[in-house]
Amino acid sequence: MRFFSETESDPAVSTERDALTRGLNPLAALDYVRTQGGAPAIAQVLRALPKDDQAILAGERRLSQRAWVPFMTQGRLLSAIDNVLGNADHTLLFEVGQHMARRDIPRLFRPFLKLGNPGWVIEFGMRMWRYYHSCGRWQIERTPVTVLATLHDHPAHEAFCSTFVGWMTGALEMGGGVHVMVDHPVCHARGAPNCVYTCRWNRRRRPDEQTEPMDRFTSDPSSLLVDPDE
Ligand SMILES: [Zn+2]
Image (tube, rainbow, N blue to C red; front, side):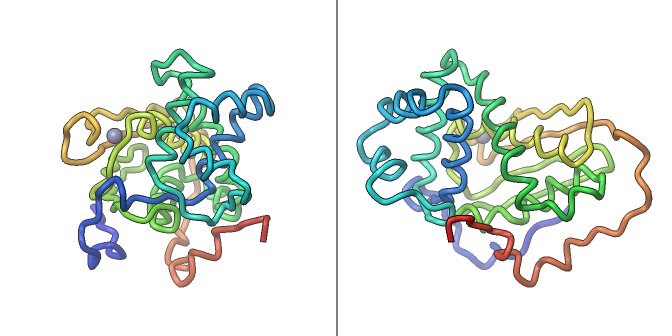
C-alpha cells in the first residue's frame, strides 16, 4: 500500500469551488466530440452548457492545455456530451474516457508504455494527478494483475467518475493489459467518503523482469505536461 506524500502536507481541499483541472482534460473530451460529429456536434454540446462554462471552454481566449478550469465545468461538459451524443445514462462516457486515455497517454507517457506493466501506467498516472488537478490524493494498492485505487479529498461528479472508468480501462490497455475490467463500486457522488475504483486485467504476454523507472521522473514530472500550443 502506498500513500503519495506530495499532498499530505496540504490541508484537505475538497470543495467544488476549489477543485480545478487542467484545460487538457476538457480539450480531450471535446476531441472525442469532434471525432463523432465535427464542429456541429461541438456547438451542440456547448449550447447545452451554462454560459459561464461556454465562456471558459470556447470563449474569445483559446483554451490552453495548461490553463486551470473548474473541475465542475469538466463534469458538466461530460454530462452534456452524454446527454447530446449518448442516452443520458453515462454509457457513452466509458467511450469518452477511453478516447481521452488513447489521445493523451501516448503523448505524456510515451517512453514508458513499452514496459508492458499495465498497473504501473495507472500508478504513474495517479502520481501525476496533482499536475492535472488542484486537489485530491490517490491511495493505490497494486498486485501484478489488479489495482485498487481510492481518490481522497476531491469532490465527485458522477459523469466524471463514469468517464474515469473508461480512462482507466484505456490506460491499462495501452500498458499492455487485455480483458481489462474496471469498476467503480464506491463513489463520493453517491454519498461515500471517497471514490474507489477496482481494476483487473490479464497480461498480454509474460513480461520480463523490469525495473520501474518512477523515481527517475519525480524530480520534475511537470516536464511531462506538454502543451503543443506553447
Ligand atoms: Zn466516484
